[in-house]
Length: 407
Ligand code: HEM
Image 1: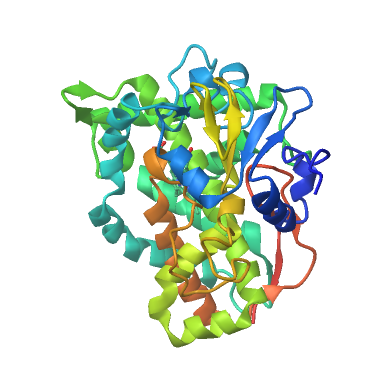
Image 2 (image 1 turned 90 degrees about the horizontal axis):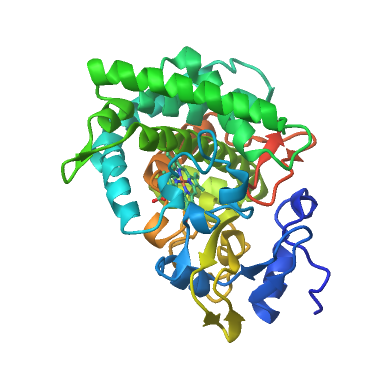
């Protein structure tokens, strides 16, 4: 097939859901595909599982660092998104830093996501899920995204960070404005995004100062008092971390919950298997992330000339890792388009892999496991009952509007 007219950057391509057939053809015929970019320098589209694993595990050659462009399809060092204020004046968050500095940074934050902290959170997550579902009362229908899916991650984040629940809508609004640049309905003006960043910086600094004086057992207190090799976390680094956690933990989990609902409705047999064997909720949570791929890609930049599958990559070339494609690679997964709640062939790349593997993966899976355990018990036959409107984005596989029949 001729892929000359294919543009994986075009957000319209994703309006009906990820273009899985196109990705299947790319994997088969042009797995390291050159995608020219109007108004940009073009990128390599890498669509096979093994290639994405190899690239992700070689950060010395394939960089995430902001000074080389960062982790998004656009150049972060030019656009400056995901930073507080001007990209050149502030420190990048860990997702846009290479080792060895990345390891030091990550070690300051990762104790906040330890298995013991997550175990302690499980009962609270369950309470929140029940409260969100109790609010539906005996209604027959709901707008699932705003009333259900969006609430859980943002409430859990607020709890995790030690923020009063009434402030959660601020977090929600700020994080939405960071990833909606391609959706005319959601996108804000550059001035409004800058104002959001400023407001978020001021809010998170107030928290920092409060927790320095009066530490609690929340993540902000932990960051305010953390030190690695005698070095304390700087305020700039804390700001980047706060923003990253709020953005990374919100949209992604919300879209896994909404996408999971749609998927379960498409596979009633799998829903029944899960009802008969609730122990499968753990593999089901991982399978939702594989099947939905809420983060469709991340980006790297080659630091030296190299080759992938015989294609000559030049130093400075942009490389897009299409997780949404690798998660359906037929060389890795049997019948990859099928949703299978006990699937166990290989970890999905929905959370990435290697150096920058998602720090919140277990927290996200915990929410999915607890949520669907409770939701499907109450509404074993829930299904979409109207138009599903998707977000216009080549980055996040997102659902904006999802009317659901509760049955
Ligand atoms: C289903 C939900 C989620 C998905 C699909 C997801 C996806 C991802 C992916 C693909 C990466 C890899 C980035 C790369 O290699 O360049 C990543 C990194 C990251 N995620 Fe998640 N994420 C989710 C939930 C969360 C949550 C709940 C949090 C925290 C509250 C979180 C925090 C992070 C952080 C801090 C990183 C950067 C790690 C690093 O650079 O070392 N994520 N995520």
